Structures are given as C-alpha cells and as structure tokens.
Image 1 (cartoon, rainbow, N blue to C red):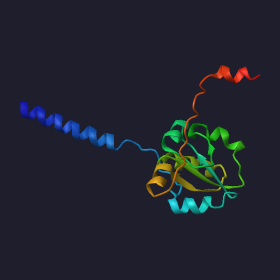
Image 2: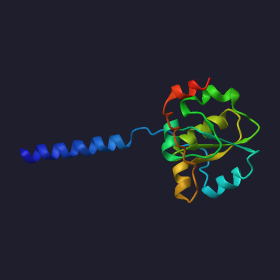
Image 3: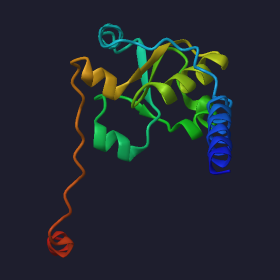
Image 4: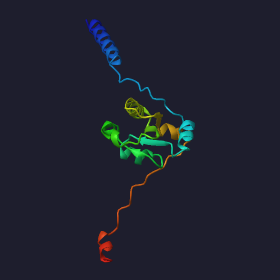
Length: 149
C-alpha cells in the first residue's frame, strides 16, 4: 500500500510540475536587444537619440545608469506618451532588457521610432561603464544655513 501511495504522489507531483511549466508566459518582446557596441554607436549621436530608463529610482541608484536619460517607470509609460519627444530614436533601458523590451513595444505601437532595448547590467557585463549615482549627503545642521540670512 505504501508503494502505491508513493507512486500516486510522485505521479501527481510530476503532472502538477508539468502544468506549472505550461502556465502562460508573457509574450516575448518584439524589440531588438542591443549590444554594448550598438548602444555606444547610437548614443555617440546624442542629438538623434533619447534614452528612456524604465527602472525604479532605487534600481538606478543601486545598479547604475547612463549619464543622460529620461526616467519613466514602465507602469507610467502609456500615461506619459504625450510628453515624450517624437523627433528622436528611442532606446529603452532596464536591468536585463525585459521591461525595456516591453517599453519599446509600447512605444513602437504608439508610433515612436525605437532602436531597441538594453539591460544596464548586461551593458556593464559587456565592458560598458555605468554612471554610479550617490545619494546626496544629509546636511549636518540645517539651522546653520538659516543663520546667514
């Protein structure tokens, strides 16, 4: 009886494991994932491109980012389309290009010219240099600033 129960449990585990593996996955992005060399070539013409970073501020602080970019988190992107410039080719950024790919798809479907997506961490792994952003240091004594006035 124990062997039968063990077999039933093993079979059920295998079946449920296969079903979980077949769960619907979000569709893959249609955006081109840029290499470091492609990104560097595009950003060498800064008057022609716009880098949109869709990460949270804490991710940019912790991982690093690019010196000039527009920060629009992925959840706010569709609400922000009216003020995103349309006269430049767009590159979207996230940590590994997954969110950036989704952002690129949203932008392209709304008529923007998109070169592709890049992951900041992938860029750095390929030898690129990210800008590390240090949080501002707190002022020692705010009342000293008021003493001068």
